[in-house]
Image 1 (cartoon, rainbow, N blue to C red):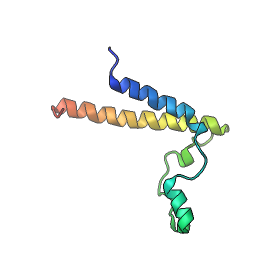
Image 2: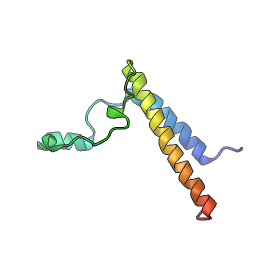
Image 3: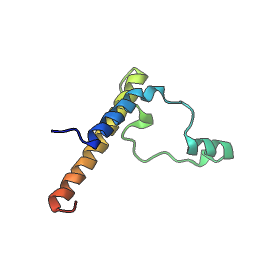
Image 4: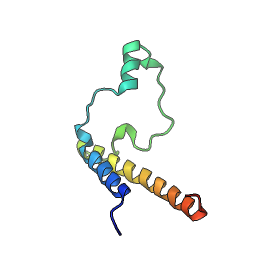
Length: 94
């Protein structure tokens, strides 16, 4: 099997997941605007959380829990995308 572009993209995505504990703990853009404009209190909780607060529950080490959540999320989305691509290719859509 020869190296394809998506192999590199997957390597980059997993590398970023390993570096995720180094990300800023400051609120993201939308959350920051909501705080600055005073409507953060109107926010509602999600009705489901696959990986709450970007950490895997039950892992004591916060950095490791964050890394694992990034790896799990990357693998899950890659699997969904790969599966959809295979289905479309099998149908002759690509």
